[in-house]
Length: 240
Length: 294
Ligand code: SF4
Ligand code: SF4
Ligand code: SF4
Image (cartoon, rainbow over all chains, first blue to last red; front, side, top):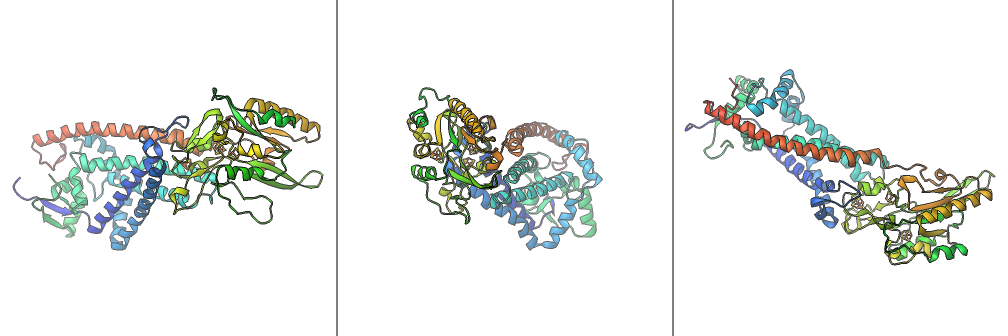
């Protein structure tokens, strides 16, 4: 198409900054955290990469893990400091799960595989975003509580508590990793939804796409006059 | 003296690493002199740590990364109303089912030859999972955030370096009353049972042999004068359910789920791409992806 496409702003700059600081820390934490997964059988040696992650290498990875943990914990505070009111309105938007969101979650697996049945109309965040939000929040709490206990309160809390914290940390790891994989897949690889990635880079997303995926939100934005619409810049914008 | 002659020349069979060795501490003969503690520090080049708590003769409050054996003093009033001390030489029990090995994510802790639980500090990453998984508080990692090289687990090695060279463990060698014995595990159990009978006959009616069955069999045995709990030893130690769930359920299931998930995403990508291209071919705009969407 020759005509420039219209884009609508979805995310603000501080929000984008927050997202990527959080995401970078999260990825570093996942990668360094895998250090602990290479010895499935205590009666045998470590397998695979495990042989390379021992001794001082593993000690450095643990250190990086803790630095990244601090970044991850600080990231939400950074966003809160930059635009507190928006954080609250976004949280309100994300927290509430409506009937539409449930319907969305029921239909989405089929829709994103076969292109049908159609999705119910969605607000700024669809059921999938909200699910992601809740998994992120709950695992964040789980990670932070168990992580801080293991980091600072080893020997202070009972050994049995430490063992439980280790278990919680690991449960959160798998939940978070599964959700994270899906999240990354949908925004980077999935043919239907990958154009949404531009919203987390430039802040803008293709208007037509937004109308298809988030009709309620786009209508409401246009009606209230809050919508920030622009023409897609020539060489950027994320949609290829 | 006869006992000394029996055990002091004993060596494990170099040709049979499946043979189980053990240490047996006859607490009825221990005088709490702590010579074993010193010998252990000296042989293993562990630094002296002066951290005795006031009001006790016990040298350290508990084992630590460089204190691998400790005479625990139990001060109590016995049935006759007399104040008495009980001594227990505490160190790693070299469990057959060891919490520390179960939790260790690296090759640092292993079930080694002769039933010894070996620790290779080169491989250790200092995570202290072992410390928290041990039911006996027998392995430790120093809290030293500024020195990664100090963050290594430390515990009794059963003097693996000595015994594989045909020597007795340092603490055994030094013990002035010969109350610590090193030898074939089965033979020591046999000896311990006889000793318990002997003690019972002499009026120590609570005497018992500890370590035969606990955690699949410990390689540290004790002839105790009182029930294990009196010494702070768990009568029925267990690897924590949380630790087992973590290692044997959540980790493997997680790996399986992530593998299955990746496969599912790949399948989804192939199918979704087909639907996407068909949608385009049917005249929908490239962003109007959904075939059924109005
Ligand atoms: S006593 Fe503790 S450190 Fe020793 S083998 Fe058993 S679990 Fe491991
Ligand atoms: S501190 Fe060392 S020995 Fe202990 S569990 Fe971690 S890696 Fe293994
Ligand atoms: S066997 Fe060796 S390492 Fe273990 S307590 Fe005795 S001297 Fe120390």
